[in-house]
Length: 104
Length: 499
Image (cartoon, rainbow over all chains, first blue to last red; front, side, top):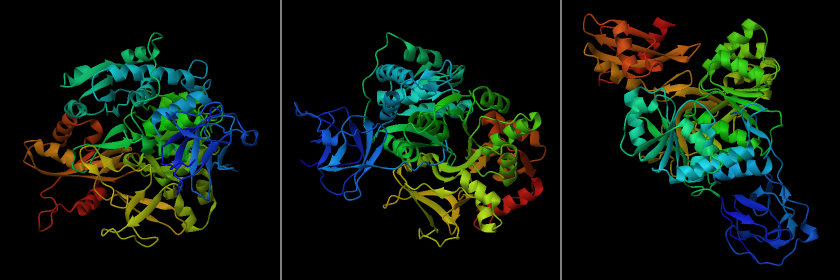
């Protein structure tokens, strides 16, 4: 299943609490998953009866950003959950925070 | 992304941290969100398409900012320092709206079509009402207008800068690490709510999980006392504030031991002031921030490391960076362009242009000022050095920046010319150590008009910060052959006369 991502679009996991928002879209359609299963747009029906795949259960912490150099996708986690984000079977890496000096 | 989501993330992940007020008795992020949702539900049901605010700082400011977002209505904080006729004109332009007001505002403005007033106390009561319904989610989407801020334009007629949810959230998520503040951090907010820095302070603090302590309005004594009593770690000031704060710290010798980071912006900071600040507060990290209302706040920062490197260096080019605003944020682009719109070489002056998701460059009823490639011309003059440090040289237009406040000479000239004895009038800003710039007028008058007459005349029609600090009486003003005022010539002459 492939998703065409747009900035600001929100997706949720079908097997845990994880929710993400697209910060930078991917260059093309991607197979975005969480906990081993395809994510769905918030507000759409999710398949039921699925369970978290242990191979994709390292967790997605709230407020962290995830990026993939190959597709260009960048996501922000808006609700943390037990599943790991992946494109297909490739787990997305957490983006290092580059803190700027506080200016406000 | 939507402002409602920023608040929800803070409430989800940092529920029990104190968000607002004293550590012992302040509101937690969970309580802030809960009250904002109640106020949001109420504001949704109240009349009007917008939610205004004419008040000093109080918990009603962040609650209304978020409450309006949750209600799906633009938040319009209005300058309470405006003279009554101007305030009334801006209120009329905000209609249809519900406006949350501090004491005395209703009496000053009077009835206006399409405007309902709600007192600060009433708004806070709606937010606190345990019986009140909390609105789920938020109204509208990321491309809706989050905030309208009236700016001082060159023509004198204030423009309403449009900041969409996407502009503000892009700024926040690209510059602030979620929950990145240590639990003991606290920021003092003393800039007024109608200033972009007042908006960005609320949003940055919420997303980073930093407690906010508000001052109703800036007062140097209260500021220093609050920083000490509340163990404030972070603050943002405009240049005029910093000089006054340093006077107190210097005279009582007690320092500001809890302070870790002091950010300054809103106008050029005189070098002697920042040197004095570094000397008096050696443990503090200084941050110079440059930004505009139209860019959702900061677009370039000179951080603590830059300050230290500049102070420690013998290289004139590195030392000069103390007078820069640092480097542009990595998430946006800056280009210096000549009058034809062509990018100039490194080191050359031109108009500062900026592009990025946080950049709005849009005014209500006037549309976008971005070019076809998305660049916003700031009307500020500047240059970039070899290492990418940005230097700002002032407005390309003639707006006077006095104590961080933008004043339009045209507006003051128009008022002077309303005086029956004034034949010609021109207003310029001249450099001033305390205010950044001072307002100076040159006038040609009929016999018998005095400086006090004219100052009183302006003060009665505009607010006091717009009253000329000095007035020069002349036989004539310098015009070119086509009748255009030679503003630069006048500014030079007046600078020599009054500094």
